[in-house]
Length: 292
Ligand code: ZN
Image: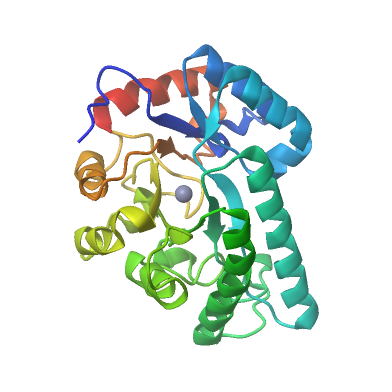
């Protein structure tokens, strides 16, 4: 297992962690500058942040600083209520794939979607099984393109509390079942993003990480689970402030040969998004050394 205690070579910042500080958007190019100034070598940006900064400008900034991506957030949202929705989802995923390729991401992260319309508060139906079938079909269609472009797809299982509105793939076992179905040899074209916030509670976690193996472990996202958690989406904790056994989970992932970035991804409306962005980045570095 790698020793992270004395440097932050393998720390990546998911840029949602500092997307909006004290009510003001922190522009992506400034986030990248602030990361570079601290010796942070990788980021994982969100599509809306890249769109606001401009794709070309983002590419130039990353190149100028020598900063890599640890992933690109995100594709997915495959579920739909009608033919137009199906086409819109497919078109949007192809655009996400294009952007991931241009930015040189190591993988496109997929948050697969829940019941169609649920995120907007109007679920079209309650048939979770059919939503899951649409997800599998959507990934299968995107995978053909992704293979051609040599862009791995990383399915991110989300905590079951998001099953209705964000992702109906909720465990690593489910995600790996889809991988086995669509990419049985484990070519590396399709795999998983292990986000500790979503999977830490799973009694099968160690076993499913082992099942994934090197070829399917494409990303590792870290933060912490606070007790109590006061918001289902935007109350993630800084590493060390909660109850997740971060080092144990990283050890399981690295035992399979994972040697990539450990990406800090914290959505925190009432705490970390209320602070100066530089302070948040400094804290991420310190906690990454001490707690991850
Ligand atoms: Zn994540």
